[in-house]
Length: 104
Image 1 (tube, rainbow, N blue to C red):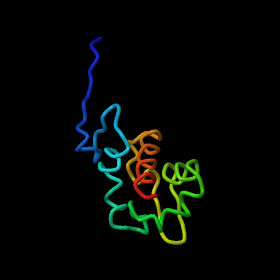
Image 2 (cartoon, one colour):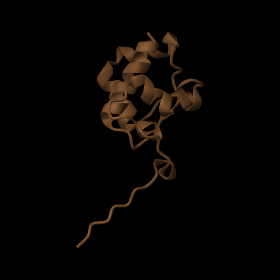
Image 3 (cartoon, helix red, strand yellow):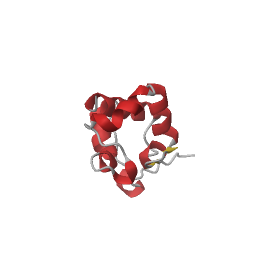
């Protein structure tokens, strides 16, 4: 029996393809920036230490969890993986690390 493969365009699936060794900036620029540059839905804006200081103080593991599984806070909502469910947990962690580095 001959095997058949179906290749779906990531554009059709609404996904942005990521390089195998993508860095945090590339992941951030592929989607996270849509909310985190303008503060959509209460997203903390990257580069503004005043909105990040308390978040950073919670520790990386809390930030990762909120970014991966989602979070409803007093000032906004973070959907799981920012709505980019095709990203791996490690991709999300790289993006979080990048945002923290840019916001200290």
